Length: 83
View 1 (spheres, rainbow, N blue to C red):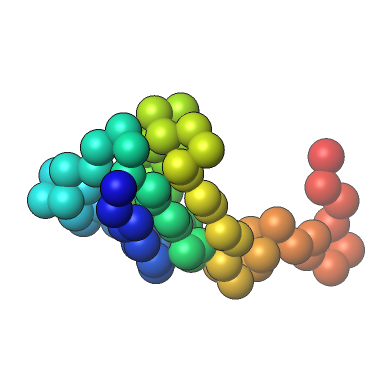
View 2: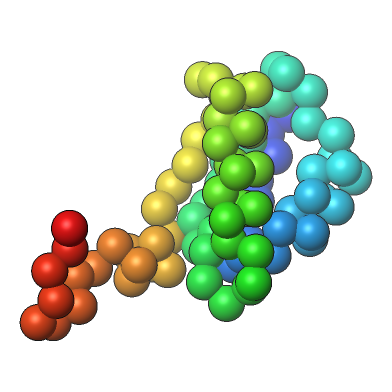
């Protein structure tokens, strides 16, 4: 079993896909995402979909940490309500 650690994807889905293609994670490999998955890049939705698939495929061998960019996206803007 390998531990594959990936950080700072920043919405760059194609780069994430290329990396996953190169390392070819197996079902027994542990995948750790260090956060900062979104923001900056243009393909945050595709990154989100990829993360959901990795989570489904790897179950308990999948670890997702929240980074400061996720914290930023989850913060309420002053004077605005989150519905």
